[in-house]
Length: 263
Image (cartoon, rainbow, N blue to C red):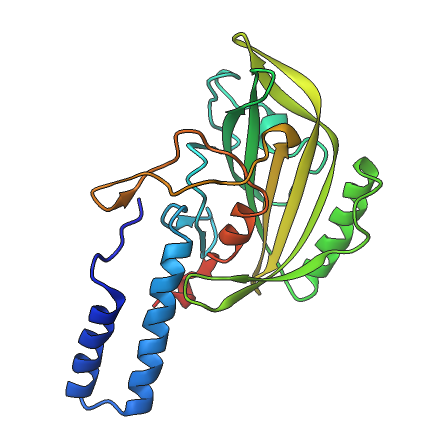
């Protein structure tokens, strides 16, 4: 869960100034520290709808997942609707297997017809060498256009703002169209072809290439409204989560860090 300082920003910065000046640090160094601290505090407010960092298994990388998700799965996980092992078409996009699948996050939202429709966040990462990210980008785009002929012809370059105020460099691609979803209605799960959104983010971390995929039926993709509930200063998951593909992918992308980047 996320926790935030209760002191006003001005008080925190004033305390920081006393500590820095007392230690004999120069004014320019103090100013850099103040700007860095202020940027982090402002950033944390914007990112408060995300959990604390989750380690991407078998990598030095961590990322923060939105609180709209309540459950995560690996390839060996049981699933309440699938039995002892999660279905492959639930674990990963059925039309685009991702290299190095690690974790899948799933939740459901109520559609206008009363059915429970699922939405997903997929985490994947593979070790890489120079130029590998570009090869993955080309291969994945080719496969994506086989299912979605109207998919963009190129990836979009995005610098995602981070809680520290610095940007994390990504490429992303979004497409839409009919795709299979495991829909639950009247207690029964069945595959339905629904109009949906799929968005894939790719980051070259040097020794790893990271992929974060997002998928949702269009009928349940709604903008987030209002503040998340909180209790005792702790932000709580929303009671009626919505995917909001214009918000959560961008915020999540900005939280990717490597162990060597940690302060």
